Amino acid sequence: MGAEEQGSPIQAEERPGCPKRMVFGPCGGVRGDGGCELAPHPCVFLAPPLPRWTDPTPSAPLPPPGGLLDRARTGPVVLTDLTVRPFDPASVRAVVAALAPVSDGLLVGEHQNRPDLPPTLMAQEVLAAGGRPWTTLACRDRNRVVLEQELAGLAAVGVDGVLCVTGDGRGPGVRPGVSSVFDLDGTRLAALAAAAGLTAAVPESPDAPPVPLRPQRVAEKERAGARLCVLNHVAGPARLAAFTAAARAAGATLPFLASVAVYTDERSARVLQAFPGLHLDDAAVERVLAAPDPVAAGIEAAVGEARALLAVPGVVGVNLSGLASAGGPAAAAAVKAEVATRIREGT
Image (cartoon, rainbow, N blue to C red):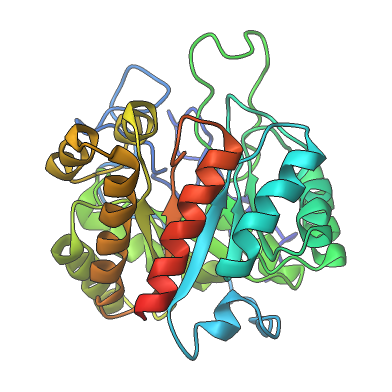
């Protein structure tokens, strides 16, 4: 059954009561108490059954030679968050110059409160500066037609992969009056990305409710076309190992990247701690912030966390995640570059 045919998961109806109009929920933003990220009621996906992908799995494109998944066949890889000044190609060039030599891929984010260049244009800037972009594509602000256009553009410019996300909700007071679209969710977007010949990555939040359904959700995303799963922050390697084992038991075979929290000051730490669905080691955070040199301590903490997570079966690499520094993009890039360098030297 093709994606355009009646009854396809691409065209399936959303779960009643979900403000993101999701078919393959839940999203990663479910609150710790089970509350919806956007509405004053519990998430409508808390109880089974979990939505299942019933269409054929799209054919997997070969990983680009020398790209992150290609390199992951021979050793651990590092995917580094790209933090730049919005709408500033010069900032992109400077940050990519610092990070590309020590990273196997650069994750171009998409934020509800910090818009930037369109994904295809940003990918071109990163490629021109010498980086290998993994472009985040969110459903929040684009209908299906625009998502298809961006996928075609990303395929044409030759990105390493696309991180397919539903998208977090717009925060209170952020661009009042601007509507959200949510034509699709991340799972259905992954199917479109795979059909466009792109390597589709998907996120998952192991500790966001409903926790027991999250491993099976990874398997369903893989059936939709995902070839890599980027896991949100967990409190430690034991929790990560339990989740990856449960995902394997549910039928998932794709590789995992584990998120490593990179923070060196109050702001960069608290921003991560405030996100729903994330679980940081709070004691480690306070040790870094109380250290005589928080920058050195934050780098050491990130390197130590990365090495511990890389020892978990099924984890082929890490995602260096977070602001890293309140000092701006250049300072943040220097911190992440140092973390990436030490990880690569240690492995």
